[in-house]
Amino acid sequence: MEDFVTLSQIDAATEAIRARTAHRPRVGMILGSGLGDLADMLEDADRIPSAEIPGWPHSTVQGHKGLLVFGKLAGQEVLILQGRTHYYEGYSMQQVTLPVRVMQRLGADTLIVTNAAGAVNPAYAPGDVMLITDQINMIGMAGLNPLRGPNLDEYGERFPDMSRAYDHDLCDLARKSAASHQITLHEGVYICLSGPSFESPADLRFLRMIGSDAVGMSTVPEVIVARHGKMRVLGLSGISNKANLDGSTLTTHEEVLASGKIIVPKMKTIILDVLSALG
Image 1: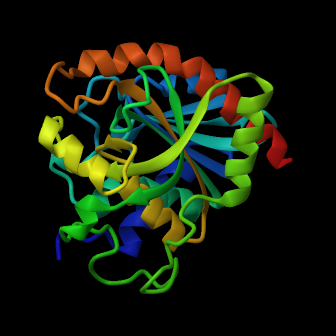
Image 2: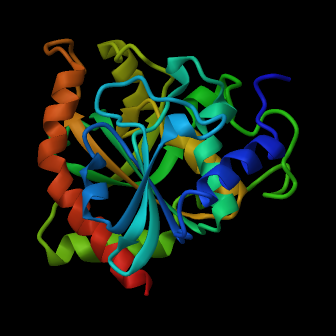
């Protein structure tokens, strides 16, 4: 049972955070590779290193700072995670999604997730942004679902519905923002694999065949846990590389980080507009 996170562990992390900040976030945000600069815009910010929170998983990936940043952004009380942990780093799925559980315990009712994703749809180019309208839980289909184990009844029922994983109203706000700023916003299905190796051309052709548009190594477990706890979710993928369906190119983590520099201004614009519209 050591892989399962208990309510007492969630509460210990929550209380450690409450002792360090007076902010009570309504919106939680998890920012992917190269996308953490939005936290620098927070007003009256409190920064807590994740290493100082009991039980909190520590990120080992370049571009993930391992900070929790609390403050006000576009009129909203928010918590931004600068960096996330992934299953491939050696954590259990419940450890990976502990931050979402703590967000819920702190009172957040909305989750905004971003990620750096590889293109599966050949129409996507590096630097593009995709609104996630649905997801394929490939890693969960193999048994690695973050809700495996004892159900936390305090959060939600045993079998949560995932037919509207991404909130329709939040998606509409993102569409409206992109249109008003002439930002090309693709819409598509994100698929989660375990990583850490990038996909082979045959992998990508298979993923395209089953209906995915972008692929990554995160987000889906977080969204499942968020929906289990009745949070509304907005998801945005920053496209880091072209679909390598024929094996003609190489994919590197440096490429992911470089594409993030193009993606960040677009993400910031959309997220700030959505937060402002929440009222």
